[in-house]
Image 1 (spheres, helix red, strand yellow):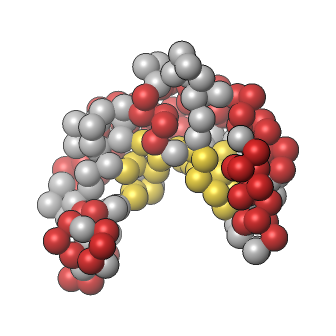
Image 2 (cartoon, rainbow, N blue to C red):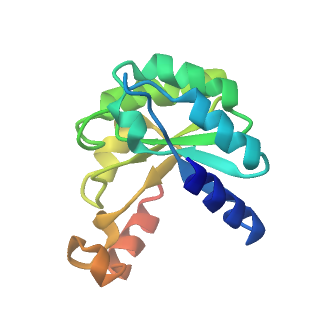
Length: 159
């Protein structure tokens, strides 16, 4: 935890505006103690709670708990608790709906998104935010950089 706190302080000192962080207890619930320690040193940074969220069994309850920190936790990166967004699209829809009802953290859908499945996922999920990883890389590899053609296709979709 000390290393993470030092990293957060470095982000602040360098003028960063946000961090990605997430911690769970051994029972796979949000580790609010760890989250509060990070918030204590990063109050002016936006926090995205990362895909540790996907390991939580009761995501709706966990989401409600994270709304207590919505001043700092601006979004939650998740595939809906399943291997990817396509398989988790119905769970993601529930989370997006809850997000809009509570005006809590946004749901940043991520995991397995591609130019060929985003429209199907968006039809169900209706999120305002999507996170692409290997789906926008050359040959699906982080080592090879971005595939500009795929990114241009996605921009034209306007989902």
